[in-house]
Length: 193
Image (cartoon, rainbow, N blue to C red; front, side, top):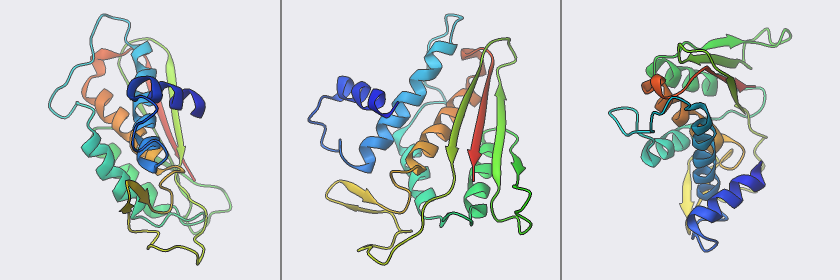
């Protein structure tokens, strides 16, 4: 899958894209790849169209990415990240549902799921990403929870794995929540601890 995303990106932008080895490259490639998945759901002649609140925008993807990079979601402490994602889902008209591991009595490791239904019969597509990151070592030169761009690369805990992918999923959901008439079936979104 990752190789396919990279090949797709290189086909669009060429192998000399200045950000190809940075977190920004991965984020852009993820956004394009997720968006194109849904082109296959559009079977009724509708074209993807820009519109108020519905246009895929890199600005919004980048803002959400930076927002999420600022949230400490080290494994075992994903609640703040889950709340952020749940709020975005509510803003776009989706109903987030929390679930917890049985042993998570402190409720610090929620997972979320939500369904975007077109109201028309069709396939169900699953978009899934994890909310947690690995721990932080003492070898960071920057604050791991302050997104920092240096020489065209963005540094922050989870920048590559997988907060960029989460931003792409949220942007895809934002678009299709505003354009339910452009696809058939359902989109099941899961954000796991």
